[in-house]
Length: 356
Image (tube, rainbow, N blue to C red; front, side, top):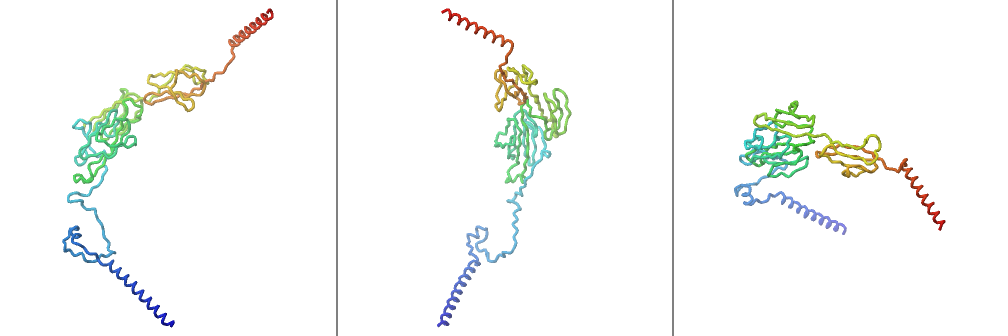
């Protein structure tokens, strides 16, 4: 009996294993069997309807995907290259917009001032058909590029120009050109030096009518006054740029009615400016406000500031004395007279009351 049970159990297990194994083999065969290819699939790949795609692919075979060939029939590989201003020729703009910079591929851009120059007027740019503005910044802050390339706000400008689109078959090389310029007021205190524009040389530099030493790249502004500069293009003598500005870095001065460097000052202290274009500010603690009434009238520690319209300023430290009641000879005499008068009046009242 036990032997029969063991025989049936073994037979059941063997049958179960054969069933599972057969299903597994069918699944593997189905995975390895190539899928059918329809005529529509062949036509989408540009092959005849009767093409034979039978065969096998070795999974260990190495394939090199090289897509560095030509794009289209005539268009070559597009590469990016940064231009240097030293490689760009600058001439006088034939349309009267200042200076024209000649770029590769018969492209160009014109500027009312040379690249890298200091300007005291509005700067305008004109771009040829295949040149675009990629980036515009003023004092490190991004500005939205516009079709009207005109700039008038003071500051340091940096732009990046691009020659065409990378998909343009006419320009297989994609160029980028960084340019810059600075705009300041006609009368300023913001300059300490002036760079000679790219592609130009200094022809004349004067300050207050005196000839200054010429430099090949940088002009140091070693004194205040009226500066006049003239630059000429190295490739076109007719391309001339002139710059004129007044440099004023001198801080204004104040005049005080009493000495402020000999200890605390007795109020009031009158204050006046020696220049018309000057604002007087007073700081007592953390509060900074314009001077009122033209004088300091209260005790305390003050910081007096003189500031002109260009931002030049000079500060003074002033210690004002606190007024305390002080007895003087005149005050003592007046006090004695008042006391004597009051005593006589009381004596008079006393006698008058006795008579009554």
